[in-house]
Length: 305
Ligand SMILES: [Mg+2]
Image (cartoon, rainbow, N blue to C red):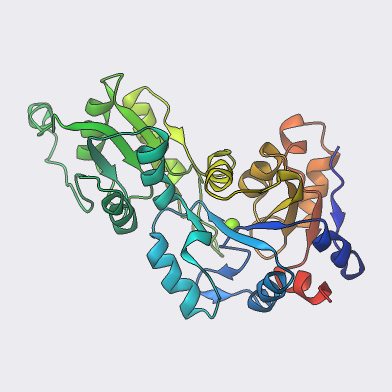
């Protein structure tokens, strides 16, 4: 059973010396939407000074690595492009290096995903609205289908429409057509009573239309960490920590990859919720229990001497 111990200030130095590599989620850990989590820059700076390798591992598919660079820099973070492991980049890299795919891509996603696909040399069908005609089966049946498309790639697409479901389902009706999704987060973290559905909700619709499951790259799956291992020599999972705010993605990915795990309480889940998981009789919930929890990344920084 996982420890689920509070990482108090006095425990921080020993913890930090037990790791060489830090995987850090972004939203709810280093920033909350547009605001920096207090102390996050300083904490990361101290970790760099200690010689730690840092990677920013995010499920959010709306930005390219370049766009993330701009966000990090504008918020005052030191960052290098190869440290950013976002799913828009991962989707393009997976097609190219994982599958050696050479055809055209039917894309449901963002400008960030377009950019990453183009950097890998892919032609794609573009993003934006594809509004449906009013109810008319013949019109849907006559929608143009591109014979060069042998891969459907999807991330967050605020313009998902009935037309797109028809097209994606039709492409995926060919069992050889590749089906890749960036992530399956069901909701965006958002204060208040409004529910903002995430990419996972859209993926469910396409999955149902296609009658097939996609390869999902984002956390809690192992792909993002495996891609880091492949492109950077000498990373030891046992000396790597995944820092995140969501147990069902961040912490579970850490567990799935044999990493140490640290939950910060500046986002989705709290240490108290982690303990509830630990006390439960559910194996599923116990799998998401972090080794440690701490108030914030800033608190981690405070403990580094
Ligand atoms: Mg998060």
